[in-house]
Amino acid sequence: MSKLLLQILKISILPAALMITSKALAMYLSVRIFDITLYIDDNIESLFSVQLYIDNFAQAQLVESVSNLAMLLSMGTVFGYIMIRYILYENSRHDPRTIVKLTKLNMTKWVTSKDTVFLKIFVWALFLFITCAIVISSTLKGMTYLWIGVAAFVTIILTGWGLVRAFESEFGKVFPSEHSNGSV
Image (cartoon, rainbow, N blue to C red; front, side, top):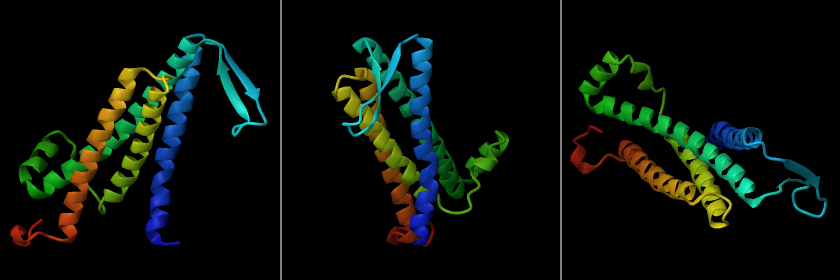
């Protein structure tokens, strides 16, 4: 197996675990907080043998919305954190004033980077795209509130923009433009 594939698999463990954990924990907490009765059934004929049922559609929509929102917020927060670190790192390479500001705020540890973080950004962006696709699909089925679906759509746009900007920056390091005079 190639080193790149192994690194992608290593990076993918945390976002996958966060997606599953945040959704499951939010489902559990919303059922407990709103005192919703949950039924568990095992249906051997279906694709998933264990199924969860809720009596009322409004309650099921509430649980699904809360769990989707928690999943979207947790994935978006971590991706935002990674992007902020990347942006600070890139800005500190080009502008010494950024280093001074970060030193005053005692945030210099945010800009230390051993190597490029583009692969981490790419993997987290893919998982965030998957999360948004799940939320939008659930919204189109009517199981999630519309505003959460709109937030997921806006998140897709912002994530795509951030991914493209990071790609442009990394591409510029590998293939510098003719106008850069040797500096990136």
